[in-house]
Amino acid sequence: MVLSDRDIKRCLESGRIKVSPAPDLSTQLGPCSIDLRLAETFRVFERSRAPFIDTQGTACDDLMREVVVALDDMFIMQPGELVLASTHESLELADDLLARLEGRSSLARLGIIVHGTAGVFEPGWRGRPTLELGNLGPMPVALHPLMRICSFTFEELSSPSDVPYWKRATSKYLGQKGADPSRFYSEKDAELRYRENSTREAAHGKATT
Image (tube, rainbow, N blue to C red; front, side, top):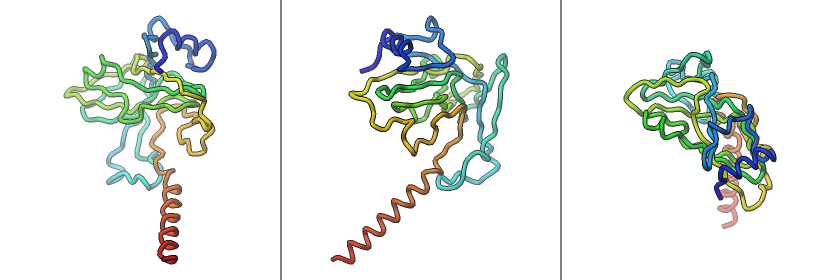
């Protein structure tokens, strides 16, 4: 069930949804969503530093450069560019609520998308949402800090999650405070253990036949 504006307000009041700093509901609350604003920090890829990105390699931090824009300035998104950014507000969810990150139609009509595939924020999420900004249009687009960049809808689970995001040991982005780079490399050890276990099971199967 998607929460209505009435239910979102109730959740904000009760603390089941926490948005900080507090949103201006007169401009940020829609019929079934709440808009969040763009922060002033961006991360851009330094394509000359490596021939490719290895998803099982080390951290991507040294492949990206942080750009901080003054609040009265702008960030220019070039056509075909992928940039990491974050919302100005932090978000916390109760253990029985999930959120979905949605783009804004007015920006999409200019070619700007706000996420690639990472649209679901799991129950118990805590931190500042990272945005995977892309410019699919033919022209550069200026983005301004504190502009309304995206919206969030909320859905209620049938029951609270047993292991919400803040309790899960493998949660890579818990408590993030800005546009954190990919932590895909941290899954490498788990994948290696899975392969080793699969190899042992296959060997054991052959031995018993």
